[in-house]
Image 1 (cartoon, protein in one colour):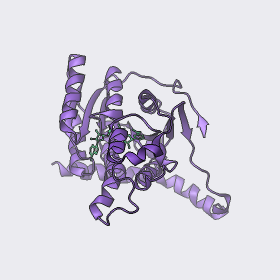
Image 2 (spheres, rainbow, N blue to C red):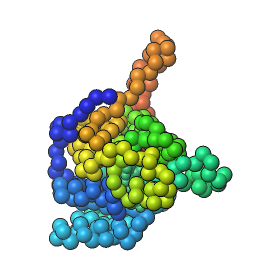
Image 3 (cartoon, rainbow, N blue to C red):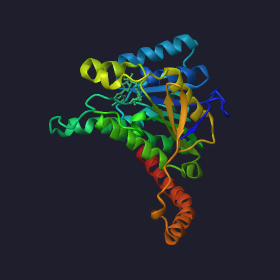
Image 4 (cartoon, helix red, strand yellow):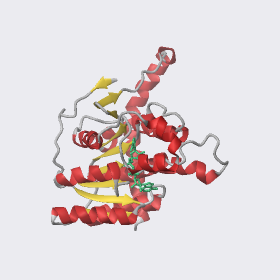
Length: 304
Ligand SMILES: NC(=O)c1ccc[n+]([C@@H]2O[C@H](COP(=O)([O-])OP(=O)(O)OC[C@H]3O[C@@H](n4cnc5c(N)ncnc54)[C@H](O)[C@@H]3O)[C@@H](O)[C@H]2O)c1
């Protein structure tokens, strides 16, 4: 683990940039939206909470005195909704440069002895993990078309450590960390960076609703809280520091700290494996560019 300072080479102006934020009707997503708008960006919020989402963008627009934000009902588990979200950003504000893939739930996080119910089991994975992957894939197409962009996923400290009794939640957030760490070559393929913030406990509705639903959980989450602004600062650092890709930032009560990817154990490495890794490194970017060109063409064909 290495410590970091968020005052590293960051620019906090986002003039001319357009951001899509999932789960931005309230909580962390809303706070990131506010900071981006104050930095000059236009923001599109996609969330299932329609009234709260609309009220949030109405406030942003009123405070700015012009149209700086728009809301569209979005269920991140659906490709149709993810596509409509990014297309809405394009039609409202001209394109997408930033995606903050933040929607998430914690309900039904303790599933070991819950009913053997497919929908119940899949819901948290569909929102927290697969919803982010779907959002990232759609974001990539829009950003590649525009010449580049930056994606930040809201994972959690539960993606690196295991909160007791939160087995399904831990698994979804570990999945996000794995997804982000696997994207080392993305900037060379399409000039898009993807990183993840991993906050500890932040006082939002998510925590409150969890304890309201099951007061016995309060005892398992009595650790020190992380100020909301630290999580916002982590997002802003990733969005403005163009040297960062496939990085994981823990956001802790005393500040941010990068979590480094563990080294592959020595016994996994041989001369032959090193040779094949070098060969793979030569092909991964041209192969990725070819696959991206096909994906872009398919996406374009869908709408013509
Ligand atoms: N609060 C914490 O302690 C904490 C800690 C670490 C990580 N996180 C993560 O931060 C993110 C934001 O959480 P928050 O604390 O702001 O909670 P929150 O409940 O205030 O915000 C989550 C938002 O996601 C939205 N959402 C849920 N399901 C959705 C779906 N299917 N489609 C679209 N939107 C959906 C909700 O409506 C809500 O607006 C989550 O991914 C959460 O797991 C939170």
